[in-house]
Image 1 (tube, rainbow, N blue to C red):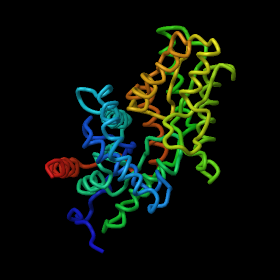
Image 2 (cartoon, one colour; image 1 turned 120 degrees about the vertical axis):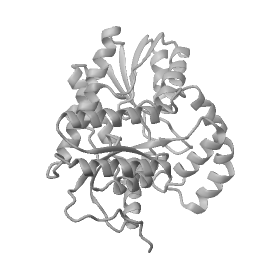
Image 3 (tube, rainbow, N blue to C red; image 1 turned 90 degrees about the horizontal axis):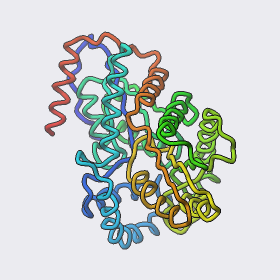
Image 4 (cartoon, helix red, strand yellow; image 1 turned 90 degrees about the vertical axis):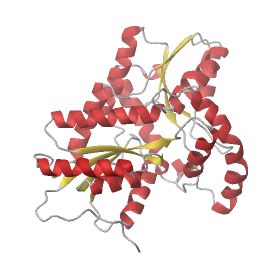
Length: 361
């Protein structure tokens, strides 16, 4: 096995600590070629699609990657920001805000972000952190609820990177934080600010990303953790059970997925005479295609066509101060035992030189 080159070792160098936020990923641009590259990587992950390769490969390369990229690119185009993909923009802002907040609390931590699929790729960012002298890394997947297809896949990528590292850094990885008080408080604060602008709707619909139903039967805790998040949020807001509806979105393929499905539920509510709904996606901590297009556009249209009158999308946590503070507290809890203070200026300069070199590669 060939190992990656390591930065020159200096005796007496203090251990540097890094924090890596990891989100799902996004195409580089809203075009069919970019979507084809992104989807090929995403849908080739055995954690994401558990169908045997012999059956899945002809479907993926013969049908999906021929037909879906153009349709997906058109959807991305409706939500693309001047700075780029919404997910990329918000994740970058979260990273910078978190670094500032941790610094305000007295920590010296290299805070970075990576994408599981697309750029910046997790292996490349880990290389950059090691080049900057980081020897301890806390990996924080941006998925509050654990799923093998999300958090589990991040762990796979991290360990594959470690297999080729000569000096494997100390690694800690968060598994889930679906019931973290700071996370729940941040969601509640987001909704309360929304309701300051207009009264609460008749129903609060909490839409989580869907997974195949078989994942629940195979032992994945995702479904239960989504419901616990919803219950804790409802209790924090003082709402009655009948005021809150939990659904699952983004179904793909013909297999049964976690139910109830989001769009049919909204259609049923509209047909039943429910005039207004507030819709929030607690499992997404940054706005992206699934929230801005699938929910704020497609689901809105479905509800209004079914007889609903007022559809109100509540944005994700993004870089809200409450969420950044919750992330900082969560990180502090899992950084305990590592000295994150008083890194010499010389080492800080070494980090900046290494990062500059990585950016030019």
